Structure formats: C-alpha cells, structure tokens
Length: 419
View 1 (cartoon, one colour):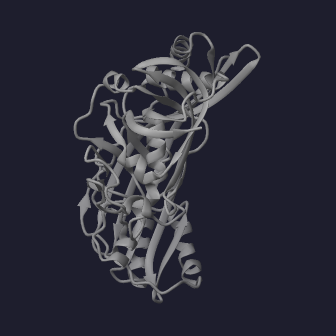
View 2: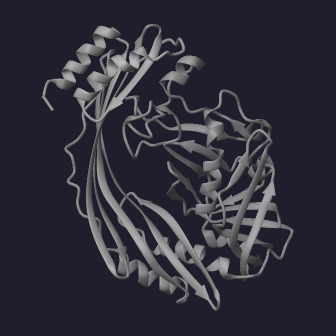
View 3: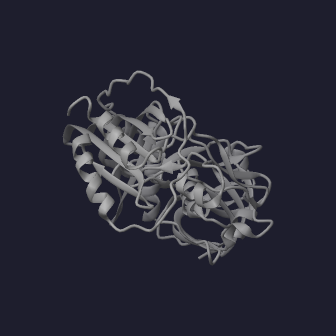
C-alpha cells in the first residue's frame, strides 16, 4: 500500500463531491484462544477495511474494499449503480486524535478457574465443555469534506462459553456470550452458565398463573434489546406511546461515552435519554436520519461492518434507576412469584401490537424464599403494562453483548402472567 493512497482517495472524493464526502478506515487485530478439557488452540487475526460515502449525480453513494487501492477502483462502479435521489447529510466538522495504541496481548487462561467456579455453582451438575476468548483492538479513522479528522481506538475482550449438565437420564447444554471491559468476571459468568445449563433439567412447570416476576440482569437486558427498534422509529411505537407506560423509577438511556469518543461517522458520543417518566423522550439519530428528521445527530451512526453504510443503532443501551436497592431487598419483596434466571428462547416483542413473550427457566419464590426450580415457564402480556409494573431495580447492573451492549440490573415486576 503506497503511503499517499489515502490522500489520493480524499483528493478523488473531493473532485467528485466537493465538501460532501466521507472516508473511513478500520484496522482490527485479535488474538483468540479456543479451549476444551483436552484442547488449547491459539490463533491471530488481522482485518483492514476502507469505506467511502459521497454525493454524486444527486444521490448518496457508498463503496467499500480491503485496501485504499481497491476502494479507489470501486468508486466508479458504485457511482454507476442507480440510486434514489437524496440530499447529502450535514457532515460534522471536528478533529480528535487517538491515544497511543495499546498492545494486543494473548487472552488469559481462564478455562480451569471457570470450570471450578461452574462446578461449585452447579453443585457438580454442570461442566465446562468449551470456551473461546478473544482479545483485541480496533483502530478507526474518519475524514470528510467538511474538515473532519477523527481517530480512535477500542480494546475488547469477549467470547463464548459452553456448559453441559446432566441429571439422571436428562442432559442439557447451554452457550453464553460474554464481554468484559476490565478483568474477567469469572464468578458471575459461572453462575449464569450454571443456571442456563441446569435449570432446564427440572420437570417442574410454573406453579402460578400470575404473580410477581423477578428478572435476572441477563433476562432484563435481552428484553430491553428487543425494544431497541422503537428508539430508531420516527414516531413512538404504540408500546411506548401510551401514558403512563412506566413508573418514574426507571429510565432507558444510551451512553457509549466510556467506550469511544465518537461514533462511526465521527459525531461526538453523548448521553441520550430515550424513555423517562412514562414518555418516549428521544430517538437515536445518525447523519442520514438526522437530515431527514431535522433533528441533530445523537452520535449513534453504527458500522456493523466496514462493508455496509452506517445506520442509527444503539451503542450502549441500558436501564437506569434513580434509587436502586440491594438484590436481597428485592427478593424479600416477592410474596409469590417467579425468578427468571435464564432465557429458554429469544425474547419476542411486537411493538406495533404492544405484546411480549418471554420463555425462561428459573425458581419459584414465596415470601422471599426459593421454593424450587422451574424447568420452563412463559410470561406474556403487554409491553406497556410490563413497563408500568416495574416496581424495583437492584444495584447490580451488568452489560451483555446482544450484539450491541445492553445493560440492566435485576428488576422486579409487580404482576405478570405465566403459563
């Protein structure tokens, strides 16, 4: 790759679309460790990507490639594709330099510690069958015709853990993704794995048709992730438009400030409150949606890959409570209900119909005490009613990759319907 090729690309884009272009580059390096009781395999990967957007012949164009020279060659092909007329977005104008890149180190050896924690958490019923851990760094740089020049880097540690459990003739396996911002949270992952692997082995159905519902942070986060399309909509969905649709206890926020200073379009990251006091309070905007709506961009132009244009999407979405309680205090408030410890199927939400369905495994609770495992249960109802009935939140908020980061504490829903 010639050193001047990025400059050549910017010169070519400026000649095609004076002041109305964007150039994006990405370099990612990861080191991976796949482990099982009898295997250790390490691998190294590196990816480079380039993408351009520009306004030509009355439309916004997009091209992507794995090198500057290939992207240069792709510009003519992309410009020849018929496209719907569209005004260019209002490109941001700022500069931000990245700090020195951190070295990419080998993923930690955590198979044995996690296996021990899982055996203890499951009382010997579950074992660790497989573990993939990935540690890496992503470097991004964005230029545009308005004068933007933003560089940023992110480190990551994520992976996938697989547990197998057996109880008599019954067996079950579960797979859980994880992502850690700092030190590995081995004990918390082991507890989640143990619940997901062993609770489905119970043949006990839900003992109540109605009752209180305590949601583990992972279950509550999955429910919130299912609501995410509502926050990209031009108007509030029925499920979030009816007042009052929530207590003042809880709000829904997106704030990726701790992850990166800019989004995938170079717009500064900021905190945005999406739902508060029972009202739809905001929406996620990238440059294109902001141009159409007449609102300012919110820093939520997300690139799922350098091969596709950015779009408005969550970056770090979470429930936020004003006065969280300790988890044991929430449990003590359950007079008769179910604790949803792990999902048995993906959460299903129909925002237009204002309906949800959550299949889960868990534990029955009476007067704040566990009464027994529940192998499978299903909660159904209206999204508006569920949000309105959230009566408590704990201080144990956790984040999960679903695939964007979604966070939630343990939540207490005062009334739900089960079958």
